[in-house]
Image (cartoon, rainbow, N blue to C red; front, top):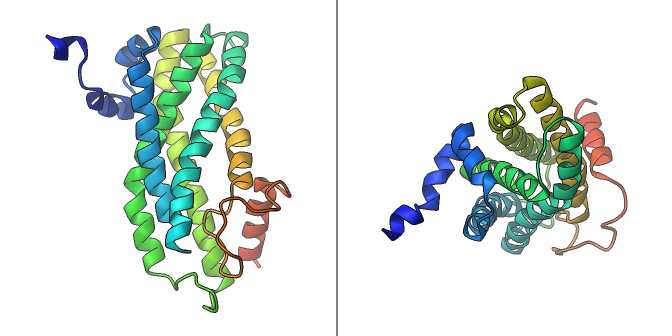
Length: 238
């Protein structure tokens, strides 16, 4: 009886990963605290595992820090963009409440975190097979930049895939593929700008062998994420 009223939330993960619009739309109609807490837990586990894989190249302490930082960035991005996205959606033709906007974005990041959690063993294998990032250990600049760009590519793949899986939901809710695309692109833009800058502020994820391991650097608010990626690409193309 109780299991009928409260089915296992674990069964929702495959549905989210497939982007099944009908059940997801039903879940969005009613705010359930247990579902929100479950999604936050999945984000903490999946993004935390990927964060630990990122930081383990530098040091165990760095892995611990990044396992906390990465889910924190995702959750701050979710709730930071929720109000903005809730305002944009009606302007673009999709009538969503702020709570429904929060749930939709939380679902997309739950999908992304599940993908990243699945990619974390691959990232561990990758950093295991390159020279350790330790003080006094020479690391070719191309290797360091390649690991950075590989991580950016993995995170971008997970984020875009998660939002595309919700494309069917937005199309169902709006009744128009054109409106769904507009809303999706506006959400992606907001997530990109806020999420990437939060990532820059809470860096480093990999760390540098020439600097001590810190949770937050003293120059955290200097520069920006996009400048860093551009410089990394420019260095590799020399």
